[in-house]
Image (cartoon, rainbow, N blue to C red; front, side, top):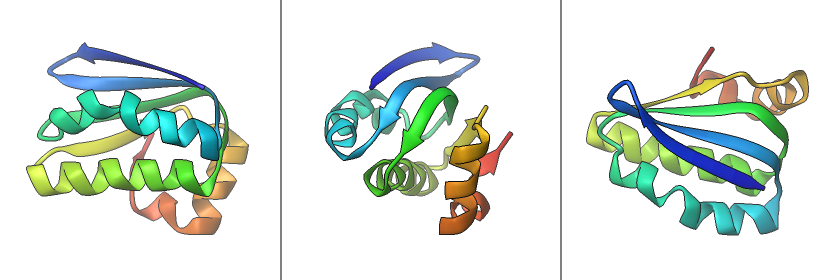
Length: 100
């Protein structure tokens, strides 16, 4: 799992590459620290190359959502594949996030 974070359009974008399974989610928690520091902005999670997400990965997304909601920002998820979309639908996450 690789996460590239870039600042653009006054917000932050995290580009996920690979599998966000439980071991990767532990490392990803540290990798997304810049997003948490900018939780007052729009944070875009680009899932174009996200192959898999575990419950630990979902928890990471939820943590970002809670932090941004508390600080006046928001999380937008873009480019999820059909498998990830199914996971979001089954868990109710599809209704928690703005997904484009």
